[in-house]
Image 1 (cartoon, rainbow, N blue to C red):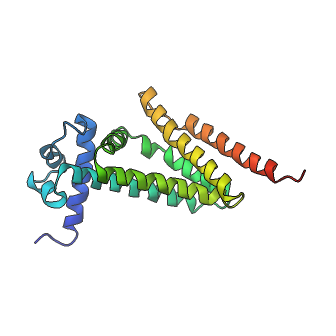
Image 2: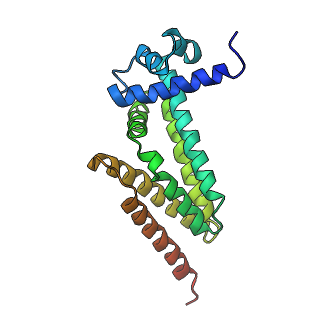
Image 3: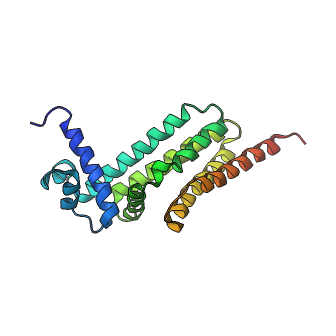
Length: 200
């Protein structure tokens, strides 16, 4: 029997091996043998733990989503106001961790596979709903539900769209300009709330 903790260590090594393989070869060309080689384990173990290549990839995406959530929570702990908390979400999305070449490759594969793989699509939908929910919650502190939902949808669209623009238009992605653009949009949203609330 594997030693205590060894199963999780193996699973993590498989996930890291998957990220490396996708970055080097792309999802379509990646094989379970590639993943096992990168993980330093026998070829059969990825099948044993995850069942299929899609299963390994979905576990990898779950890992990246949990890591993104952990980074976000860490920043949110230091934020107090709604603006600061939305800013924490923005900075997480455009952090250096999210612009590592191998992570970029994995996220691209995530979006592509979500078109045809139901479980991958479900994970993408969870990510998107969570992002919208977190943003709406902060906007809702200062405005009505409908306005908050609209502002949250716009902010989420800018985050996702600008992230893609960053990684597609340069070999050295830099999240700073994108961060400032989203921050400017958020500021305009809050300014409009104040204008709307001002008595005539």
